[in-house]
Each structure stands twice: as structure tokens, then as C-alpha cells.
Length: 328
Image (cartoon, rainbow, N blue to C red; front, top):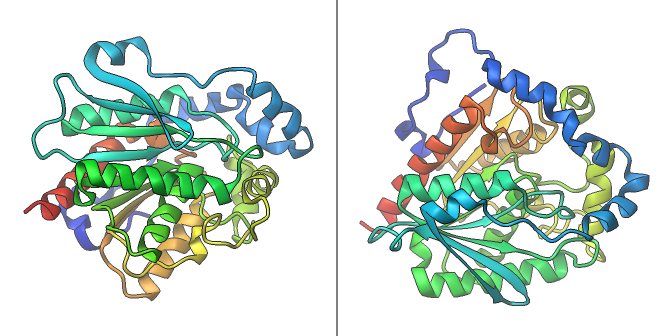
């Protein structure tokens, strides 16, 4: 399944050839190895999650690997109570290049990972662009009621510096959900909207109400429904689970910027992506791109597989095309 709408016509893909599609050999090998990371175990045993989160907090969040410091300008500052990392090409971004605000995934409870830094760095190189990556506070210590306003304040800073029309808000998994929720808050308070949104394997509904997840779960080597429910409650805090700041699937979709949505059929969160697309279609919204890759797993866009490289290429093209519109 690979559906294209709106600006999708600018994104060529061999996945529309009509030929049988299977995941690449490298992707299949990576999928087999995913259980070794322990992420599935983390999400499958929610009764042990508090102790495991406490263990995670003993380590500082990682930063970009040395090779990226040699290839890019990377700096760190503090804004609105948390660390913020800025990445740009050596000597600065190209004149008129876009700027990305990247919100990392991890169920709102896990720190940023090396694959996040690698993917953002690659996009900066591909686009000649700069990016801001907040090391945002995590649940259960800090909840959506504090995190979303902090990200809104950071976005205001970036909009003033780079121009809202130059910004793409993007993220993966929980960060994808936060990206959509942030855009909804900006729309709600009348602020200047970003040029575009990019959602990788987005987690959009913390209520656990998505039909079909249980059937996909045996194929998903990273996530479980029970673990998502536990993380969702931790992030929601005193907010209802269906509050749009926690579950943006239930928030306003009309009037948002163009968005690109990427998902895979072996990821339980493909259900959220499909529901988002169905809602966009029902509202008559066509200015979006939906990429659903057969047999691909959670956040495959960030991993070193051919499909991940293709997704980043498509993402760069999407950002570039909408940025050009915003600056034409």
C-alpha cells in the first residue's frame, strides 16, 4: 500500500511500479536483529517499566557521534529549561535553506538515540539545512502539560530567528505525535505555522483504541500495545488520554501545513497512520503524502536499510518542495 496525494506527485517511487514488493535483504536482517535491542522487552513488560526508566536515567542522553562533528557544525545551548542542540553545515546553512525542528521518539520516556542524530545529520547534509533538536524532558517526571508549552516556546524562538515559513516540524514515533500536537497548538493560538510537517511512524493515539494493533503485534519486533498504554498514561499525567496534546489524532486537522506521513505494515502504529489518513480524506484534505511500506518495521526510516535511505530522500524532497513554495 503506497498512497499519494497533493504534492505527492513530486515524489517518484519505484514502489508504484506494480511489481511484487518485498523488503530488502538488509531490512529483513535488521528486523530479525531488532529483539536484541531489548526495546520489545521494555514495552512488553509494563509492570517493570518504572524500574527500567529509573535505570535509563542513570545515563546522560547521548550526543552526535564524532564523525558528525567533523562534517557539520554542532553546538549546544539551553532554552526553556532543557538542552537544545543545533546542527548545520560547516560555515552555516545554504542561503534560504529550510530549518528543521526535530522531536525524537522513545515513548516519551526514553532519551534520544544515535539513529536520531544520524538521520537529522543526513538531512542537514542533503538539504544544506540547519536543524534544532531539543533534549526535551521525559515522562513520568515531566508530562505533556509542561512539555508541549516548552516546545511551543522553542518554536516561537525558531520562527523569529528563521521565519516560520522556513521551518519543518518533524519527529518519529512519540516525537511524530508531539510534532502534530505542536502544530495543532500553534494553529489554536494563532501563531505562524511552519511550512510543513513530517511524521515518521507517528504515535497519534495514546488511548489504545486503534483496531488492528493486536493482530500486527506478533510481527512488531519493537512495540507492544500494553507498553504504549503505560507510556501514554505516564506522559498524559493529569490530562485525559484523548486530549489532543497527548493524542493529536483527536485534535484539529483542518488548516494545518502540508504533511508527509511514513509507516510500515509490521508496525502496530501503522494503525494510527491509517486513521490519520482516513480523517484527512474525510475532511477533503489532499495536501499530504502517505508512504506505507510493506513488511517494514517501526521507525525504519531512521535505520541503515535501503528503505530508510529512500524515506530520507523522499523527506528531503518533500521539505524542499514546500520550502520553495513558502519562499517563492
